[in-house]
Image (cartoon, rainbow over all chains, first blue to last red; front, side, top):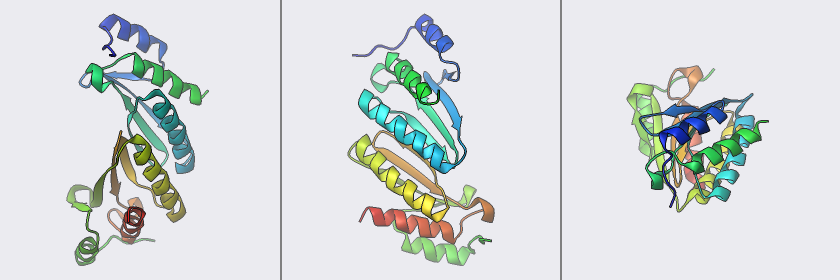
Length: 96
Length: 96
C-alpha cells in the first residue's frame, strides 16, 4: 500500500524537482514539455510510456503537436505519493 | 489551403463517422476510446501517431491508463476540415 506524502515530505520532494508544479486541487504534480515537433514529442512520450509501464504507475497526460503535459498522482493513495516523485525523476532524466 | 467544412458537409461527414461527436465550441470532433490496459492504449496511440505524422495532421489527445480521448480540428482552417474527417476514418480503421 502506497501512502500519500505528508506536506513536509511533499515540500522536500518538490524542492528537488525543478520543473514540476504542485496542483493542490488534485494533490498532483504537473509539468509541461515542449519539443521541436510532433515526432520529437511522441518519441518522448514513447519513452515515458515504457518508464510508466515498468513502474506500474501511469500518467494523466496530453499532447498537442510539439507540446506534452504530464500530471502525476497516485489513485490508490488518494494523492501524491513517492511513486509520483520517482516517476517524475525518471521522466526528467530522459531530458538530461 | 484547407477550408473549413460547411455545416452541410459536416453533417454528412459526421453521419458516416459513427463514434465521433461534434464539439461546437471548438468546431472539432472528439471520440473516447477504452482499452484493456495501458499497454493496449499506448499501442493504439503509437499507431495513431504514425497515421498523424504521415498525414501531417496531428490530434489534440489525452490518455489516462486504458482510456484515450482524441479531438480533431484544423488550426489552419479555423475549425473542422476534410483533414479531420480523413484522420478520424483512418483511426477508426485501426479498430476494425
